Length: 376
Image (cartoon, rainbow, N blue to C red; front, side, top):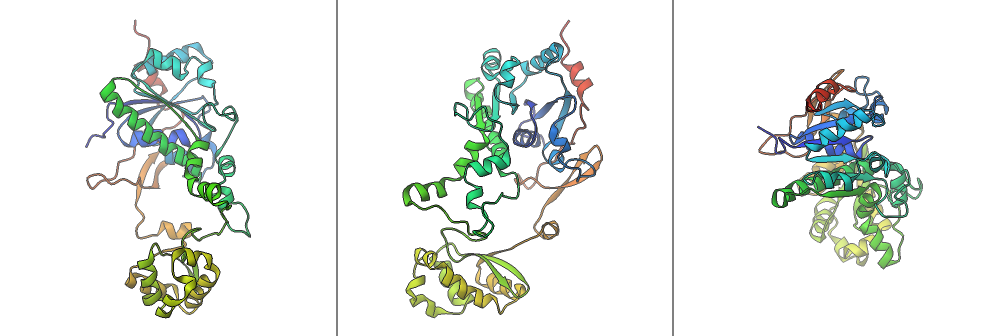
C-alpha cells in the first residue's frame, strides 16, 4: 500500500535528534527524504556505537532517507541544493540560527522563490526571543524550562528525564505542523513558514506546574514516582518488587479501598474523603497502602488489581521492556545489518508502517547529483 505522502519531496539540513525525528516520520509516511549531510556526516552518527557498531540515535531516526554529502561553502554544492529545493515540498533545517540565511537558504528567500515550499526552522529558543541566538541542547532545555526541577525526588534533587524529551517532542511537533502545512497547501496552493524551538515545545508541556505556581503560589514538589495532584497514585513496594498504582477518580478509589485493601471503614475517615483530602494527607494514606503491600508479592498484588480493574504498572528495567509481552518491534535495515527497533506507534488499517533503510554517509550522493544536474 502506498504511503499517504508518496510523491512528497522533503529536503533536510538536519543534525542530532529533533529535525531528523520529524523527517523520519515523514519518510515512514511515504515521503522521499533527501538528507543533506556535511562530508563527515550528521554528528549524531558518532553519539554511540551500540547498534551493530552504529549510533543508536542515528539508526532510530534516519531510516528511509537518502544521504547526499554537500559542502555548503562550495558554490556548486550550494547551487545543487537550490536545484533540489526547486522541486521540493518541504525543507527542514536545524542549523545554528541565521546559518541558512547567510547561505542564501533562509526561509524568506526560499518562500519568495518557491511559494509552494514549506520551510520548517527548528532552534533551541523561540524566534524573536532574547535567547534565540544561544546554543542549546536537550538537557539544557530540560533544566531551563523547569522540567528538571519537578523531576526526581527531594533526595535526588533536580533530575534529567531519562530520554531526550526536548528533542523528541519538538520533532513530533514539527511533524504535526508540517502535515498541517501540506494539508493547507491543498486549499491555498501556498506553503508555510514553520518555526519551532526546543524551549517553546517543552515549556508548553509545563502548563500544569506553571499554573500551580502562578495562581496557586506553590512550587511543585519533586515526589519521584508519584502523581503531584492525585492520591493514591505512585509506587509501592511488595515483598519481591515494586508496583505502581493509579487511582483516577472517586469510583476507583472506592473500589481500591473496598476490594483491594479490604477496608471499607476508610470511607468515613475525613482525611481520605476526596482526592484533595487524600493529597493533603498523602504520607498517612501512602503509609496505610504500603502496610498492605508489605504482606503481598508482586504476583498477588497484580492478581488483586486485575480482578478489581485498577490500573497498575511494573517498574521495568530495559531487560524487562525487551521481553515485555506487549512490546512491538520491527527490523530496520542498516549498512551493518538488520537492527530491531521498537515499532512506530500508529497502526493504520491493521498495519504498522514499513521502515526504510538507514543510509551510509553519502550513499546516494552520486545518484542525487546526477538527478539534479544542471539542465543543458
